[in-house]
Image (cartoon, rainbow, N blue to C red; front, side, top):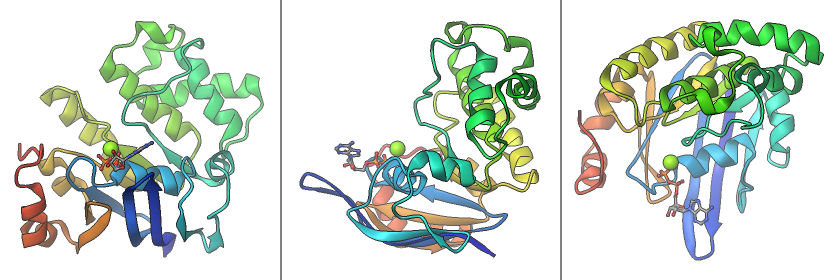
Length: 243
Ligand SMILES: Nc1ncnc2c1ncn2[C@@H]1O[C@H](COP(=O)(O)OP(=O)(O)O)[C@@H](O)[C@H]1O
Ligand SMILES: [Mg+2]
């Protein structure tokens, strides 16, 4: 079943067309890899689909309901969640309180006292239970990325956008994160992943959509998309990593 569809999405910043008419969908249970060189519009598409940026044109439906004009916090409550390329925790709260916020305002819709209890479950899922009562300033980048995941999961999403969760991690941490992404998928959550490390996108994705300059240039199973001449050309001379 198709969970999320987007049609002819345009997003302009001044004279720049970050998205120039992007159409696609996310099926229930799939892991869609979103790839493309820097500046190709991946984060902008995530922003538009999660409600953090308004498209200039186009429409979005989620579970057959038009959500084009639905605000981000309402989409969050309905099960659309995302992480940020650069972690954005609430810096004045503890680790556990950060996760509790998602349990209060997300699909779980818990009262604060229960949210604080339940937060531990999602911290444990991400291996952060031992850090629950620390201030955010005590976490390193790796832990902040895992906190982003815990917060996103605590909203009990149906679809989760992961924007470069592996960026800045060392090889061991990357392997650990891949296993965690698989565990998230096993929870029944549909995933859209943006990653620079080709090997990771290939290994995880059931389908790949390649963007270049705000347009879809290829779409299909990973092996085909990665061989596509337009995709290969788009990455030549870009900061793309083949590792
Ligand atoms: N808030 C913004 N204001 C102005 N330009 C932006 C903004 N966000 C993105 N852009 C521009 O839109 C294009 C796509 O950016 P982005 O979606 O971040 O690409 P990616 O995530 O694929 O690297 C780039 O040219 C970028 O500079
Ligand atoms: Mg980006």
